[in-house]
Length: 347
Image (cartoon, rainbow, N blue to C red):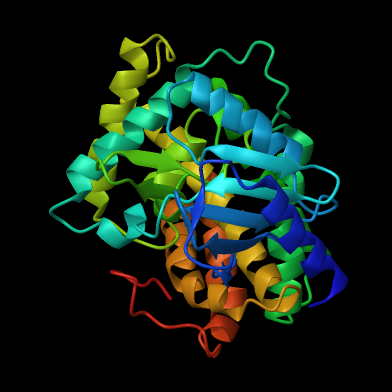
């Protein structure tokens, strides 16, 4: 056992809650990692606990605690925090089990489960942002994320060299998408509100995880993350109906004023275009920089989302034509490109 792991094990032993009962000597079972640098370990204790090794120079541990406390005040279920060492990035959390919303979704459960998820989302968005010390999803942040597409997906993953005219095209689209994001009501945004980050508890209620990147941002962002999930696809008519239904919920609660279905749907679609272009860059970076190639298998669905959204509105049509002309031939040759999980592949 190296020095860091030894320190981690001793810290866990020292900070186990007094009412915890162990099943023999303490053991740490490594769990599959997420998209960040955190490492999770399931402990053989009652109640069930997770130990988290979250490098403080790479992860936003203070923000995790701040958002966790904010969610608790809103009555939203999330992992209870038992202990934290900010200096070393060690945490002890409640173990919510292995049953994610993703594992439970089908055509029979989707209505109930999305009702639950949207109720949580509305509670988050209804929270007053006054005094919340979360960063704003501002122009600089949105632009930086958009640029991940060029640097990681286009240039590094596909090996395509962008010309100046192509960079101009991408900059124009980025400007339109940033304006779309900033013109919307700004609320508390989870930033990764999808089926793998919503856990189903023993009482069948939902709990939220992986919320440390929360910001103050566009009202449609988390709704896009949920309904245009990068890991599961739903029929267009279902998505559209839920978007309209959620707009009415926002209108009834005063979070929206004088916003038609048409305007809200356009906000939603262009927000999805921004998010999924960003995700293409992030998944490429996870594969190339962080040695997590499994994310490449989710790119076909993300590409499908991007191109369908791009061709719906004038802001994205030049991008759609360029993508199909310049990038699609290379994408079709990639070992990760397949149509298995895409209902209506565009390429």
